Image 1: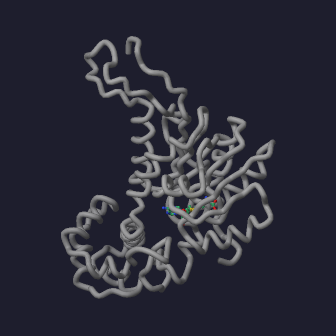
Image 2: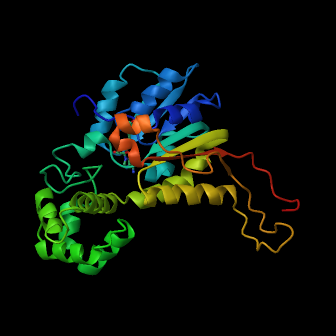
Amino acid sequence: MNDPIHIPVMANEVVHYLLENNGTKYLDCTLGAGGHTALLIEKANRSINVTGIDIDETAIDACRKRFKGSSKVRVEHGSYGNLEFLDRRIGLGDLDGIIADFGQSSDQLLSESVGMSYQQSAPLDMRYDRSAGMTAEEFLNSVGFDELKRLLKEIGQESNASQIARAIVKAQPLSTTDDLVKAVSSVSSPFKLNKVLSRVFMVVRVVVNDELGAIDRFLTYAPTLLKRGGRIVCISFDSNQDGRVKNAFRSLANPCICPPTLPVCLCNRIPTLKVITPRALQPTESEIESNKRSRSARLRVAEKFNPQPITSSR
Ligand SMILES: C[S@@+](CC[C@H](N)C(=O)[O-])C[C@H]1O[C@@H](n2cnc3c(N)ncnc32)[C@H](O)[C@@H]1O
């Protein structure tokens, strides 16, 4: 990677919510170009340490250079979908804060070798971790009509899923982003084409990288790494991601499964998180103006709860 072009999204909010608790030990689960990590280090009025992980080796190499010589930043290759393994391998626990900024960086989107953008001619790869897993080409050439239609509907909320899936399956074998653009364009209105293409490319990227599975595993394990009062900040860029964060935070804050007619809680499930942002925060207009990529960002914050068994009246 050359000089990073990625601008950290909702940086003021990330810094505010993570540093507010006067902590010292943080985890950046989506290091990317290192933007959020660098800001946390710069803005803290005390000495803090950040472990930064990313699944993309190119991003990791660039961050190793960026933070070379800094004793405050530890850079590790790994997936937020596999935090338990990473925790056992390098020890992550007792954290004051965690940041996860989901999706792709601008550097990945504009990379000529990865094929994540419909605006770039590139081989259909789309993997964040190019050493493992199925490429977009392998996926698109092996998927059947029914499965592709389902994925376009469920992940992309694409109303023309049927026609698009049929056009893609008919175009098999595909090998470049241009092949995919051509297939989708053949059945889409030119007026809506850009939106449709970005949805189709997003769906393929999400499937190839098992992004939603990784987010679910992250949301299960990450809260266990926080110390009391520790905060978790998640930035999502679509409703699949944000819905998962919202539901996970809510169910960890309100885990009781007793029928509402019961006067006291009998399930004894203990809240482990407190929701700090009842509604997702959005970027300010001036941020959207200066960084268009931020426009769909939704930020949610939760805090590790002081666990007390629920014994009294509900
Ligand atoms: C939006 S960028 C993060 C940008 C970063 N916050 C910054 O300010 O530079 C998202 C990053 O998440 C990484 N990523 C995607 N899936 C991942 C996973 N399962 N585990 C770890 N990192 C992942 C991508 O490689 C990408 O670098």
